[in-house]
Image 1: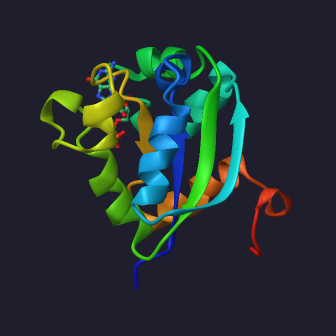
Image 2 (image 1 turned 90 degrees about the vertical axis):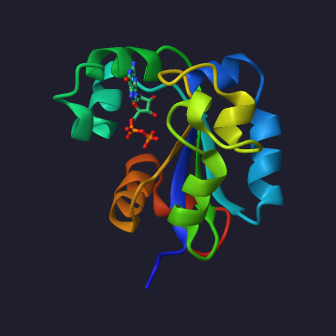
Image 3 (image 1 turned 90 degrees about the horizontal axis):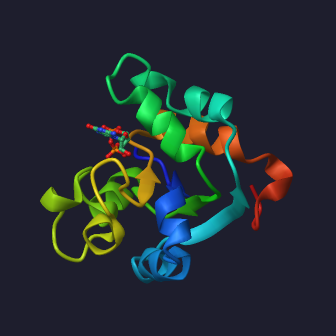
Length: 142
Ligand code: GDP
């Protein structure tokens, strides 16, 4: 059975470009409930842990530098089939390939500065939610 939550991060570029409100409007319009939310600045070492799956990729250092370059907004989102539906809502990694109306098509600057993160599996969603949030930080019963 598919899980009902996913983890999103509004990346530093989208925060800087004042897209927090526009992005969350799309998220709520699409039927997701915000279950926990906070702003923070990731230390480079924290970004390395969060993206450790990409450790061996050529763009790893660039990714870590970017994700720790400024404040982000992290949130836990709830909805049936959250992971799959949210990946559909954000669109392809590269905004040039993302479908019209998707968050990355609307708000991303480039493949590396692509506005938003969305978990890619239920298992990763669980781990990523726990990476950012403790139980008491949830807006609703958890
Ligand atoms: P996602 O699941 O759609 O976010 O994509 P991936 O898991 O493949 O990559 C994670 C993140 O790494 C992406 O969201 C981008 O921010 C970044 N990224 C992916 N490919 C590249 C690349 O070729 N160059 C750089 N600089 N960053 C990339």
